[in-house]
Each structure stands twice: as C-alpha cells, then as structure tokens.
Amino acid sequence: MDMQQLMQQAQQFQQKMAGLQAELAERTVTSSVGGGMVQATVNGRHQLVELKIEPEVINPEDPDMLRDLVMAAVNDAMARAQEMIQKEMGKLTGGMNIPGLF
Image (cartoon, rainbow, N blue to C red; front, side, top):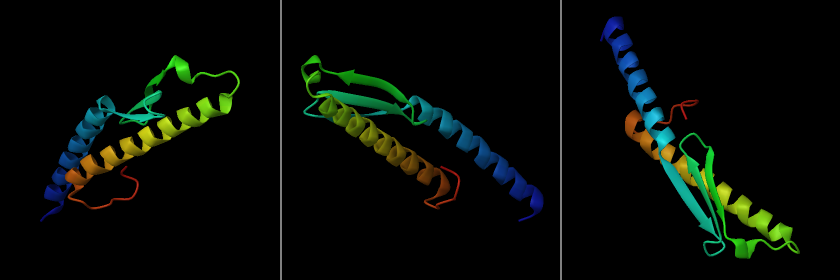
C-alpha cells in the first residue's frame, strides 16, 4: 500500500467518523429511576436534553431524595450514552480501541 492510498483511507475514515458523530448527536437514551418518578434523557454528545420529574417525588421536607434520584437518572443515562457511542464506534473501527477517538 502506498502513501497516497493510506491517506485516502484515512480521509474516508475521517468522513465516516464525522458522519457517525453527527448521527450519534441526534440519538438519545433515557434512564428512569424511582419507579419512573425521575427520567433523564441524554444525547450522543453527553448533553442532558430532557429531565422529567413527577410532582409526587417533590417533597420540600426531603430535598436529598430528589437530588439523589436526579443524580442517579442522569448518571445512568450518561453511562448508557457512552455504551451506545462505544458500540457504534466499535462497528466503525472494527472493535479496535483507538485512544482519544471517543
């Protein structure tokens, strides 16, 4: 393989990567905790795009419970987003773990 072919392959990979990143930015994952009382939705850019809190879980006497539920939902949604990203990137890289890629 000559240098020109290698550069073309690298460019094609870069284009595929950019397309996949754009696609993943549009995908979302949702986590639900507390029996569905708190739901967090995160996109493929690790941005929180929606947070639903049922009124019944809002208790002024116990703000720590609400805080804990929100943190659990957001953290789980972030972990699910990362799993989704790794799975899709793995398809593109053939399962190779390329440091700094995602």
